Length: 351
Image (cartoon, rainbow, N blue to C red; front, side):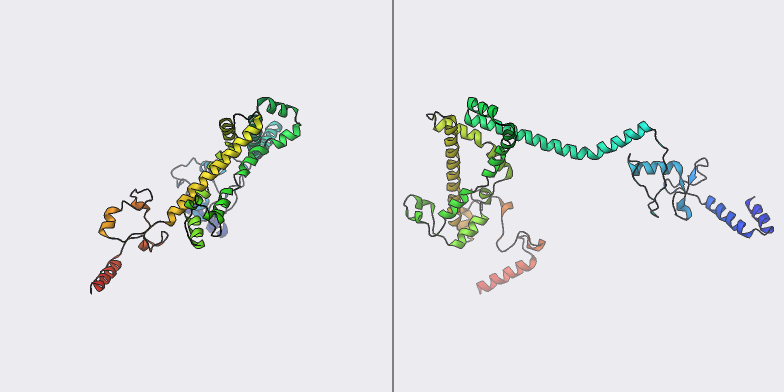
């Protein structure tokens, strides 16, 4: 029927119209949805649209499939622009106008949605600020005593309290940054230190060069000089409580609560620092006195491992002459060439 129609139109000289009609007929016959890949014969009741500048079979798509694909791309945000994946043409999506009330609600919802991140950040900072104020007030009452501390807070200026109390935990955290133990250790390990001649203190020393001191102090037991952040924070925030306990234990005869707690805090800091210095110095001296034995049957029988505590942990071994970050051929295992070289060396030694 279509061919008869084209022949009749060609007979009357309408060649251009005939070509256009044939092109449209060919496109209808080849019409396939690029989303569900269904042809026109499979669903004759479906509505077809051409939303972009694509040509050929890919320019046609079911209207229902296109709506579903646009919903997946927008994800509830109707202001998001959706474009064709092939020709990158933006789809001309037109929505019906909303009423005044719905438009106002949509505008308000958009403003709230955009400002929600800022509000959450302000609430988080506010929670930290009020927690710092509470901790500062608790520390003042704890160090000065309940009657004196509450009286000081009640009679103080509001602005001074709002600015001063949050600085209490900040000051405690910054106090942990003062590494006076490292300074004392550096003084102890100095080759020109006069305390090396004291008989009692000389037990902590060992004659080493400055290069050995620097290398061992920088590479070994770095966890003592660089504690983790959790330890620093917990130690700083627990300092007032520990100072109160130390003051009550060692200075119960001091009548003033503030003086007793300050003496307790100084005692705790000094005792903790001296014990830390003693441990680090003993570990340093122990590292300086380490020995590497020859690989003999007797030494293998006597030796129990390569760990300082005597335990055997082969997974922690570092092979001499190999780097831990080397390639797979340098992982500490011998290749055939290495074994051949070792055998050759052994034979030459026997000769």
